Length: 618
Image (tube, rainbow, N blue to C red; front, side):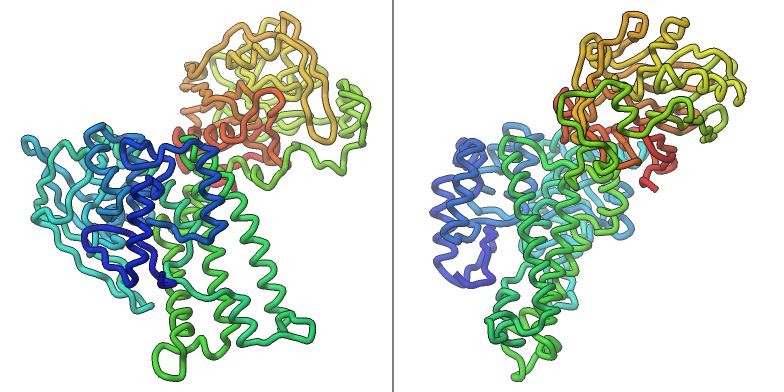
């Protein structure tokens, strides 16, 4: 097959080589264009393990993908998750066979990175919607058969609401497509004008005004796809170019040591990225959506792709400066254009800036979660001990904690809301006319100093104490507060964990946490959500499943626009997931996503450890 020919299918498909079309047809007959999809809609019905074997065999024989495009990578998975049976039966077999090509109607003039501000409208008219508006940067719209599109169906709703997800045939009257010529000389993007386009209501995917849910999920598939593919044009390897244009030394290595080192670093990063994406693909084969991890794949995949072409240009030297003419080979000209095209990867599917400062904020609260860190504390600061779990005195000595020497530092974050820093987790304090409410309470040994700090900011006895989770450094203050009459509150799973002894694996050391006595157990628990109306503000308690532990709570102070996250957000070192006791990596990411959906860009964020932060993690 030609090096730059990857079959996308569709009614307008043209193939340079008949083998390309034959490969697509033979794979489609067996369902191998979408091997994990059900057989009923054109897939092979393979399970997770079978898909992994199939992928490995395709790589072993260096087989090209039989089919590419938004059909199999974006709208297909979305229809499997959100589409009606009629929509699945109509569209999925055509996608799997390569007989239909899809484009995406998302970005608009003025609504790119801030996609939720889109203005293309869909107004009900009997059994149809009438769509008016304009889409920009519509990849492949001039050759597309169908478009999946975000439209505004309720102009009075908040911008993330009132959006619907709809499908329509590109031959529908009222659609005008104009290609946009890029600096690379290609025109893969288009402007798409929608003037009184009539679309049946049966083409609405998911619920009316719930299109943002579908759109976000579909973007996750797109970002994972962009992060894992090249710039759209096939070129020779960096090593081939370097060997030809730079030359080899006597030992057979690339003669330029700087270029040689840069290529080696790039290959190492490539390998690490490939292994990470492979693991995610294997998980996706079980039905898991990529989630916010797709933003990381998109960001780093884009950087790797651009970096590859920059290394190719470095190897080419002055031969990379050509645009046309007999002084340059076809390979050289293709490489220059491919480098220019690779820059578009940093824009399409969400700009790299958005991935770094917007969507990736959904996992930024997990900070260095994916840098293979596992402990809250630096390992080299902890004395090694190999003869079983430590008790509290041993742990104190290992970490250099000293209750007598420790001081409480107070920081005001809003009117009536403070943070106390001491030994253990950060304590949130709400003080007002109705009394004192704490979030976390550290250790009973610290309670005299904590109480004094509360008195200094105008409070008295503690009326309520909410535990963000059950770990010793956040909740053992219950031993002092419970017997004193404080109402103790936690998520139900946290209280359950407090009933028994547990070993907490801090990687460098283990700590044996004993069961809490009855007087120190929460007397109020909740499952998913709970509300307090205290000190003239609404206080929300939210649980989104296992994360740092099985029973984490995010506490949102709506009146102060602040949130305390406990150790779901830890700024003092590598975030720690208590996997031995039910904590979960993907749950940690999901928890952060869910919290960020519940707050805004101005929210004050109180971590479990470390200094007070904000929405962007600054």
